[in-house]
Length: 304
Image 1: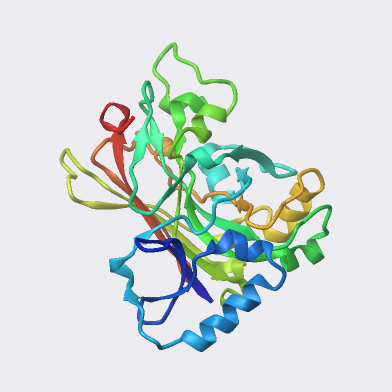
Image 2 (image 1 turned 90 degrees about the vertical axis):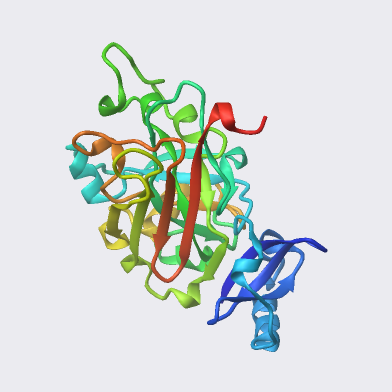
């Protein structure tokens, strides 16, 4: 199934079937999180989708998107693509490098990414988000995919100067020494509205990921610049290996998201480095799943 989370003016948060014609057929007002927590929740949605398929619905362009899920936890894997490590001249790690984000960072498709006060090096990273469907605690890699409900597109927004990347720092400046502010600030996790179940993606190990920036000013104003173009086949730790590693220490619950890393091409490691500016737009896309696109605004222009 391809499901879409959206705002229904009459009923609030809604969940719909996204059909081949990009029309949204309403399925539930409970939202995906509740369905994942229910026994046979996805099976119930699938039966409803089969009954309602072809019954009309609204064009996707006429509904306001919401994030596909509201995770209890967002566990992210850094440095998980070989070409991303190579562009930094870093050695290959022997285990996944983990960090976290929270719900304050979560925004839907179309909502502004706010460049915080004092940040001068904003960057974007397209990532495959893995949505957990069954509790995963100390599961093996062989069992891991039984705990996956589906996939979503996410953008791991990063303040590179706060993270401490040398290419983003002014002489004499230094980063925070850890990634909490750099990765976890408000609006730093745009998430697509489309949730695609595992049966639609039989091989998540060969998905194409791309990101584009649309420049809002300067000589490239209005031009769409391809930043990243990679494949999940380049992951060092694939989805089963990542779930096995994470679940040894962190119990993953239904609705949690595992963000699996990004390919090369991010702004900070270009020569010279480039960063997102107010007026720009960042779009992330994964073949077979969907996209998320958000404008950039400065903190001084954002609503308080």
